[in-house]
Image 1: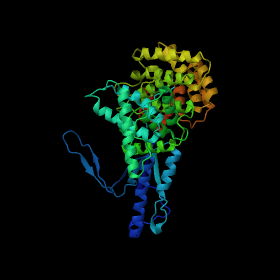
Image 2 (image 1 turned 135 degrees about the horizontal axis):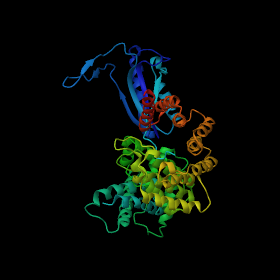
Image 3 (image 1 turned 135 degrees about the vertical axis):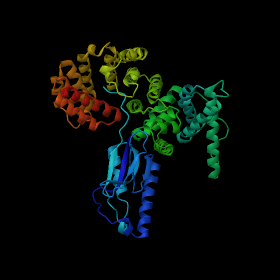
Image 4 (image 1 turned 90 degrees about the vertical axis):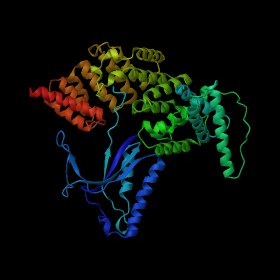
Length: 135
Length: 381
């Protein structure tokens, strides 16, 4: 009963084993990849472990407060930003071991040549509610 | 409408259906449907006999579902007429349901979800909201759990310890949403205590009551965690404390000590102290020794180090801590506290910051960060 975020990076994670950019895959390979991702999410729904999955556009805007009565300042996108999040999946599982197992499966999604990408996914635990019993 | 009454009838009604020959999976669905209908119908038209109403409606839902099922499969294999109610051992049924829903073949999260629905009478939506997952996910979790235990014979005696672990989880790790899971855990533990005479059930109930009594004092109006020593003890619920202590004493008198009784004894000693300074730490250390003997859990040893620090001074606490693995959750927080009490402020501030970094929840992280900030501000002066 712990929630974990599986983070997929466009940039900033160590290089995948099968590190071919998606636009060099065949259309069939792309379809196989998308199917794998959808099947994976459907399977987690079936096991009662799925919470959320979202993909993000690669380009974003930085925004900050600029003082009373002034509109917020916007900036970017910054091409040089080191870390770039591509999307996430949130799971609710019984143990850390189960979270690692699932992240491993997601990382096996097929890429170029129909072979697993072996991409690095970042696994981050959610902060929980404090326990009731403390001593 | 009295939703508590409605929910308290759930296990009895489910028991009646199962005794009449309905399989658990279908019966549980039928009871859930009947509960949903009761929530809809009762406010305008409250029944004179709520239990009778629920049994009738649930049985009809069960027959409807079975008939639809049978029609789909083009076979008729279930009798239509209502069977005689027969002797209904309601208490036994409730107990069997607890065993079934906490069956060892279930994962903890499945057992928790199934218990809250089949014994607690909560709807899938309420359970999903309570655990912050989509309703579809919770529905799947419950339906898988039911399939997992579908083959378990209903009359099979279970292990009460597995039930207690599930109820403890509901109480201790509950989020605070619309459904008050701590109150629900207490209600379910009371119901269990009425169905089975067992000192550890009483011990868990006492433990819950004693902790629940402090709830109002545990958080400040801004949501900040208030540690035990700083709590306004006039805000503790003395009725719950008195009840918890009475239940605990009756359990301890039976001389079959278990971990929940020992934990409750520690909570009772805290509850007994009019001020934090008057806490009987020597006795608390003795109870931690009992707990260590019963569970040998590293978390217990960590809490024991805190108690030793209070009973025999921070140096003794640090010595007890030194025997433990420093990768334990909350190790740094305990070390920070003991170093501060020992007067080593720079180490304490560093360890509080480290503990904040490792905190498993936001309230603790904020609390530990404030502790580090407080000491740093004092050192800067």
